[in-house]
Length: 261
Ligand SMILES: C[S@@+](CC[C@H](N)C(=O)[O-])C[C@H]1O[C@@H](n2cnc3c(N)ncnc32)[C@H](O)[C@@H]1O
Image (cartoon, rainbow, N blue to C red; front, side):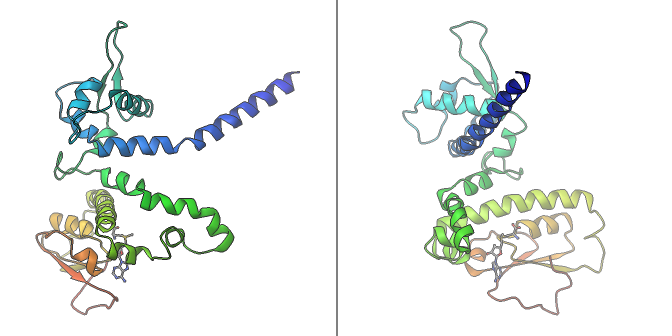
């Protein structure tokens, strides 16, 4: 009898796992919606916790927001500890939503210039263009091949980016935000690595829009940074002091360069 009870319990726990993973996409979609609606920016820039109505009234380009829908997103994100919620002490009160250390990673560049953020990565990974390849996984197993190309009419990802400026920006922004996070972590610990006087120039090959190399040059201004990438990427790269952006379609080492990333 006890063994049967344990078996039933284990089976139920197994079922819970399947429900959890079946619906886990809802977490990603709620996170993406919050970033799109600039909810982290709104909550972090407010003096104190906010009601759903207050958040809704601050959402850009949204003259008649659906409070019920917004409240559902907020409740889910509170459960996932992206935001906090103070529950009202009486029945008539409204929940008040506040920031967390996680929501700080979702601020837009305009709201927090020069602050590290994962918002562009959230938008990129959860965009239909990047979600579509995941739907091709079983085909990849059956047929082999590359999921992105199956999902996008046989186009290689770099060709797709070259032909689609919106995708190009989405992808490059996501790469740049993570490159900055990783490079600042490296630079904070690897203090002597770039400091030697013999290192005068440094190339990041396939460096996207130059996030990584610009971080290195910013903390080691004696280094001349060179960022190599494909023409459609370099064309959109911002200018960074001490950095040169260079288009490349095939990779050749230059004798002038002393170090490659
Ligand atoms: C995965 S992304 C990484 C970007 C950057 N290194 C980072 O970590 O954020 C790969 C980069 O390689 C670039 N790339 C692909 N083929 C290349 C080639 N033949 N020459 C130069 N860059 C290339 C892409 O355009 C893209 O920016």
